[in-house]
Length: 342
Image (tube, helix red, strand yellow):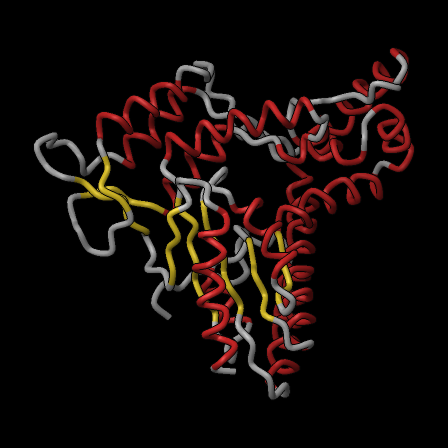
């Protein structure tokens, strides 16, 4: 394996480890008996690269494609886990907060109340949110959170297995699993790595619009943080003077200007991810640390620099223009090629 990573991550209990190993063994052996061998399209891209828009279009146009979207599962399962642990408190929350907005209310500082909620209901919900967060941010609840995360991983595996068993291709949008981990779980299935690229300045402007629309339409499922963008960008791309597998020639000055614009919206307080259950925005110093790491090989302004993927991809689609049909065309060509080789 070219880019090995631990399959089990940092599970806190032997029970979780045993269950995961058992599930992966079951899935791999049961799939091996299936004569059909459709592929898994492992979809990668930064926040606001246009993945959701493209996935929505693909789900309507492709008949033999099953979408497994990690975000959908995460946003559904964390509130369910909270409901199971705090049933009375949860009942109070849903009176004041729409179910689609519960995830952000529970895990971030953003709370959007229903317009129909009374002042008393909102005040009770605020008090309940504080009680839940204070409890779940206790050190002893790391195991609880990891168990919820492991359940999400297992559900993704089960959904992929079901789709493959029905002879469908799978488009997987996931951060929990790397492409290499997916290949370990399904060793007899082709895992096709597809990256959807978007220039950082354009992605940042999309993020701002996305967040404005999320509040206008009262749907925080679409809300994203600047941290989501910079962390994802730094984790999947590198910038250097090598022209090997380049996606884009980049102007360091323009990129620095865009980074500065994003950083100026952030606070100076280093409060990002300091708790177990909650997460939030990066501080400006933390953002600048990511920026420095990304640009550490770009000190000579006389050189030409390129953005390229940290891990080689089977297909890279430049979606900076936001031309969804063009992106679908590139995927469609690959899809039909795979269909012809079944």
